[in-house]
Amino acid sequence: MRDFKLEAPIAASRDGDSPRPRTPQTVARRAETSTVAEAIPVALPVAHPVAHPVAHPVACSTGRRFELSIAAQIGLLLVGHVALWTWVGLSSRSNFDAPGDMVEAYAWAQQFQWGYYKHPPLSAWVVGLWFALLPATPLAYSLLAALNGAIGLAGLAWLAREFLPPRWVLLVVAVASLAPGITALAMRFNANAILVSTWPWAMALFVRLMRHGRARDAVLCGVACALALLGKYYSAVLLLSLLASALWLPAWRRRLPTAPVALALAVFLLALAPHLSWLLAQAQGPIEYARAATGHQSPTQSWSRAIHFGLAQVVFPLLAFTALQRSLVGPARRRAFWQAATAALRPRNEPLWLIAMLPVVATVVITLATAARTASVWGLAIAAGLALLAVDRARAAGGRLDVRRLWTTLAAIWAAVALLSPLWWQARAALGTPSVSEPRAELAQALQRSWRRETGRPLPWVSGTRKLAASTAFYAGDHPRYWSLWNSAVETPWADRADIAARGALIVCDDGDAECRQRAASWSSDRRTLSVAKSARGYHFPPRSYVFYFVHPRGLPRPH
Image (cartoon, rainbow, N blue to C red; front, side):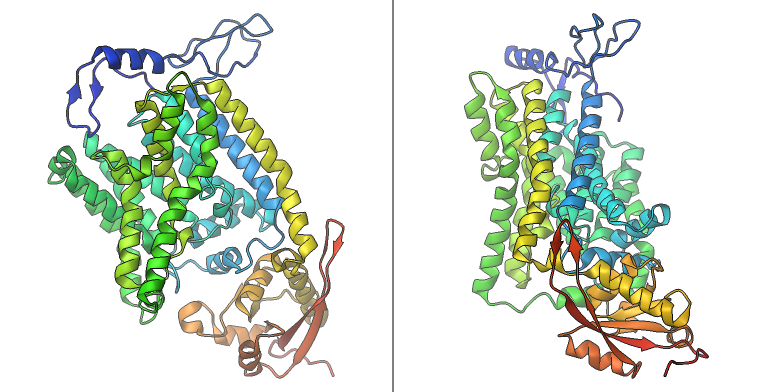
């Protein structure tokens, strides 16, 4: 990340339309915000003191003076974020997520497609590229989920610097890095979590395009908005919110009929073209999957979901406001914190409120209009905009920032999360929660041993109960290819029935999944049972029973 610049003597207006002259009040505020005495001192044996435009040197024990710039501190925060949440992903869970979203993404990623039957392809593309570089292990997957959040935080910093001085950008990133939507909930890497990394960049580049109108911003904005939509179609809510903001703000509205905006639109459509072509060719696909999730609720249920979604987006970030409250100093700190905490509920005719809150408002309206089964986790990425809005309101209310207190608070919270994470696993283990006690990795390894013992070959294909079969694809060392028993032509169109019949396969069903057993019987009459138990961290969980079907390779003698 390149270094931030101090604000120019003439400050840009909120909507980027025209500069506004400095008043005595803004001069005082600039003086306060350009003071960086709170930067973190780092003792290093350097030959000369290092000057930096946004860092103030302080004495170190070596007698030398050196400072981390604000940009370096943001980088340090991102590294700490990745390290902490990779540890949390490893220490707090055994099976990624109970529904199997993460192993499903891995199964999809085995075959590049322009789209998949439930969602657009970006999350599967990212997983496929990631595991082309790294081995398929829980550590690597946890690292990917943590990096996804850090990429989003970097995009948020890029957005925040359009509105705030450097030190306050650091506070924005710190507050957002503690929001559940960007941390704990985003560790379940799926089509919702991928928006955590794409939305902030789409917002940042759109704002830059509206304010500066440069060609490079137009190209990057088109790509970023396309990636957001390729992550999940729910991103249409963000794009509509950005367009509504541009139509509402006079300076942005004047930017719309210009060549850079036309260039951004062209790049956006070009980036989406392969997926749109794929989508139009599907008789059954993501559109039908989304349509099945709408129109099946009573008005009361729709109101309940809409209210729950709206409240969740506003309340979730409040848990991260500890860092904000602890970092504010000065006589106006209480008023500043109150303004920050209630910013979402105080509409203003300004870009920040619009881009932060319109996605929430739009989701509520669409939920009521379509009776969609809206889930609060759709809005994980909304926390980024709300963090920026809150910090901006705190600064506008006269709050002063103590960066040392911010880092002290972050360190305390990080230490608490790191210590509590394995305890959270222990608590669920004591309760026998399936997300901890279910032996998915052990089942995959047992199935592979059974196949290899009988055939002497690597396991080529696996199917069955979706989360079990996809888990086998991930955890088994052979990483067999997954295909769907239910509607293979739609769900796994890459599956070749002739290849499956020739090379053989295993079909694994949960003991209570009668439909899976019925469909598996049409593939093989060789039905077997398997009992597997999980042992981890001193806990020995009760065994679970599974049924699997042996589809023998063609030409291989069958045992009697």
